[in-house]
Length: 445
Image (tube, rainbow, N blue to C red; front, side, top):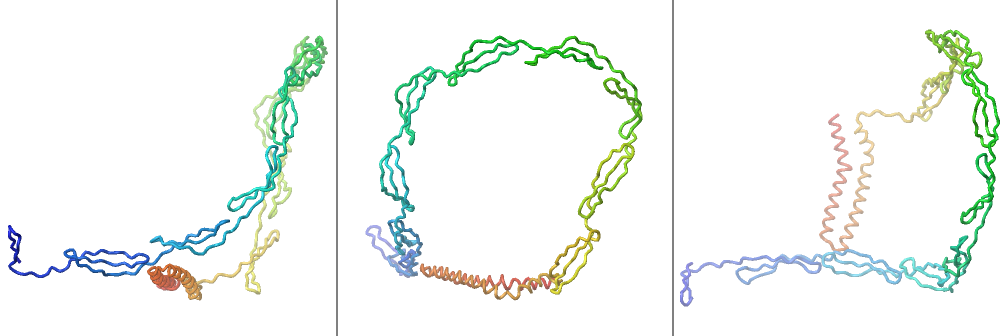
């Protein structure tokens, strides 16, 4: 179609007619809420025509419970609030618990009253009763700061609370001297020392002169190796000195030839006839070594060690060696009781020690271990399946009831589907899988 328009007045005409364009809709989806259904508004983008369609049901509330416990003075309750729209209501009120008071006695002090305080063990609320008067201070007097030569102060201290205050000045205590006698020594003066027991001040009395040494003389005779002398020793202090020294006498040796022994070679020994001092010179012959003979002192048994004694025939040296225990040598015999239990008896052929051991049931040889396990499990397949399916049904039933209570219909439908899938999975695991494993094992073997 061609449209002609006047450039001056704007009037138009066409040389032919055309068909209607038809509506071109824009869809505006309004989602459902907890209380109102959803729908879609279709509006033509060319004209003002529109309509509403695709209606959906309201979702219903999805409540979540929050419990506020009761307190001593206020009731408790449960608030159910919708997780989508925030709508809420309160239900299940519980009574206030009331206070639970615990009594504590606070004793009077010197300056403060005593009382009994009752405190609630649950909320901390408290009140007081039975007040008593303060006790007042009980002072004792002590002196502080006074020395032997300087004044101190009187201090008044309460025996209950420790509170204190200072009174007037006191006179100095004066020295308290104790006499100590110090006897004179060989080289130092003696006398009396007076010492104060409080401050340590001291002074000396009249001194006494030193006593001097009291020597006692003793002659020490010369020996083969050391000279002689006279030793002078003080009987009081132990001081000493020596004089009149003489030369050593020297050794007077005799010679003794000793043949080789088990542990030593041949040697020449020089022995002093005066003091017994010896010196040795090796002559080159080696030791002969021991020649032992052994004697069994105690024979070893199955459980106890024995002892063997070795004695050298030449020098008599001896030592004892341990013989290890031999251990049991068991002979084994098997017997069967009337109950069919095999008893194995161990008897030592040396000492006759014996003990018995029950072997229990004997193992049965099977052609296939998997077949054996299946045969053990087969009588219980149906019962295991029914028990597991029963537990699954109870769990899903509880979940379905909760969803129905909260008006979650879509969730409830999904639960029914999941319940059926769960039964199939339980059947596959507990029934089909063992049968499949048994079949594969039969093919392999």
